[in-house]
Image (tube, rainbow, N blue to C red; front, side):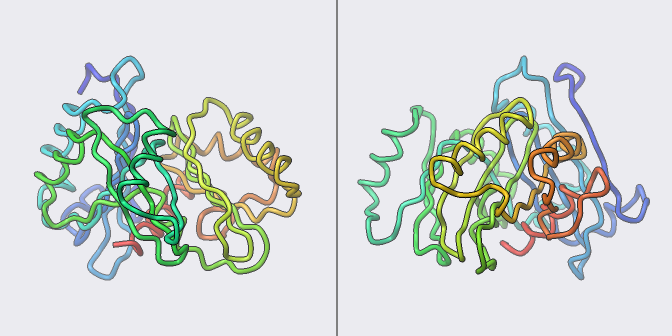
Length: 274
């Protein structure tokens, strides 16, 4: 792993380094050049979060990196405990059910995004949105997940953002990894916008949001903004975002006060999806 110049971070809810023995359920998130793992007790109490990312001089989806962690991390010692694997991809599309047909939807996705020959396309029903979500990911990654976690459901990272229970006003949800931001906007409970985009600075995220608001005559000060994150490293970006959006909250609606608050709220919301 040294050759990957990895960034490894660990959060233990009780400060106990031996929490792996107490873990009864595990979820993980695969993002570009990174892997997020959360372990829960039998009563669904969050016990630990681990995040490992690798240097940008390596491919976006380096299969050896993910395979190594799947085979060596203590939270994966009992692979049957992994209940959900979430994947982030900017190659996605939301299609209203009244317009959806499998062949046409795949054609639309291919026209919008460059779908490589080694990509596989998954579809997920979005009951709350009366729509279908399409996601394209490298087949090598999804096959690796299937081999290692036969009891786990494979889902898009953004799936929790479509379980929207905010019915009043504009509600925007952000999820930050080191390289991408996932944005979903609802108005009075109706889906308006979904986008997964690369970014380098908080200013770029603010520009994406404000530009959409300007084009659609939305006052950005009226947004109810919540944010989750993949690791403690995104805390700095979240703090910078509050310069543009002072009312920004964690994904669970609480103030973001500690470096792990974004990652903790992500774990709690993803657990409800499996």
